Image (cartoon, rainbow, N blue to C red; front, side, top):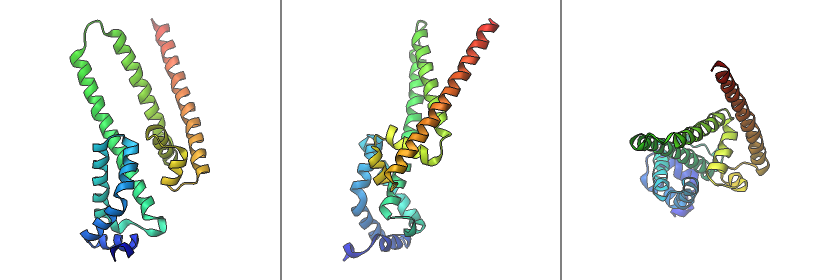
Length: 200
């Protein structure tokens, strides 16, 4: 009998805080959502945390689901992607802080070359992150999934319910925008360096 209930019927029951309905949704979608999360984060424990956060959000916000906006699976994939990206960012921040602390503890007088390389790498990473923040939300989404999540353009098209041609167009425009922004940053850096040399 429970298998005959539609996703919409179950979501309405979850909106009324029916825990049995949540369990049924969990049983239907736990596996694909976990696989999707794992593909993004490449970490089983973090994927489990993402899955727990996903179903907690569904429990707390079931009434916000609107069937007219798309299938429940598409809505859940979007939620999972957002939670996974947030999880990666938090982990990256923690890792960066740990690296900085370790570098400070292990710093020696003759590490200037290594420090210069590390600073340069950090600057480049910050430039890329800054440039990505200037992309549109749609462009940022596909770049994040393809270049950081390891998905193919076809997989992004299917999982996010976006036509493949649209995915390719967004990637192309995003890459063009990033290239222009990074070139501008590079030119600004060269101008700054030239001014510094002239002042010496």
